[in-house]
Amino acid sequence: MRGTVEYQLADEPFRPIAGSLVVPDDALAVTLADSRALLRLPDSSTVDIGARARVRVGAFNALASEKPTTLTVELGAIHFTIRHPAGAHANYVFVTPTAQVAVRGTEGYLVAGPRGTDFYCADCTAGDVTVQVGPTAYTLTTGQQIIVVGSDAATANVTVVKAPCVNPAAIAISAGKLGRNVPPERQVDTTDSLSADPLLAPAPSPRP
Image (cartoon, rainbow, N blue to C red; front, top):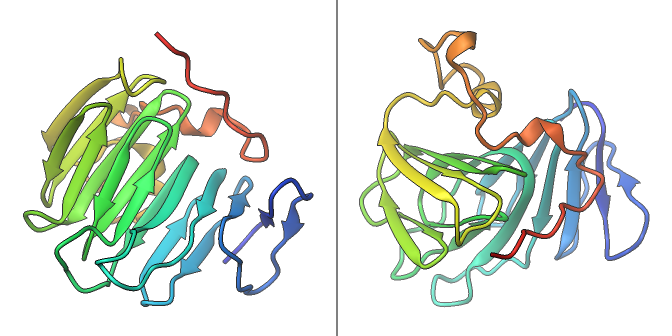
C-alpha cells in the first residue's frame, strides 16, 4: 500500500514488493517504518499490516473441516476481516509469541511485540473468537480486549476487559475507528511492538 514492504522465502534474502504480488505459502512479509501492506486471501478475507511488522503467511485452507489457515504475527499490528462462512471449527488462527487467536467471521485488531500480545474484538459474535494463552482459553465478543503482558505464555499476566482500545499501534492502523476519545497520554502499547527490528527474527521466549 505504501512505503517499504518486503518478503522472504526460507533463508533467502528479503525481496521488495512493488505493487502487488502473489506470495507462496510460508512467505515472511515485513513492513518497515511508515509502511503498510494489505494481504488478500482467496476467500476475500483481508489482513491489513501496519508499520514495522513481521508476519508469516501459512497455507490457505478453504474448508472449515480442514486444518485452519495460520498466520504468525511475530511483530507489529494487524487489522483483519475474516469473511469465511462460520463453520463448526475455527477457520483462521493468528499465532503470536505468547497467544493463539482462533477466529471465524470476525473483525479484530492484533498487536504483538517482545513484551506480549494485545487483541481487540471489533466485531466478534459469541463463539467466533477463542484466545489460547498457555493452558487457558478465553472467549471474547465485540468490544472486549485481551491484554497478555509477558514474553512467555506460561508465565504471562492476562487481562480481559470491555473498554475502548488504548493501544497506539492498534489505533494507528484503525484509521480513527479505535481510540477516538482516548488522548495520546492515555495510550499504552503493553507489547512494546515498535521497539524491535522487523528484519530480525524475534529472540526465543525464556523458559521458566
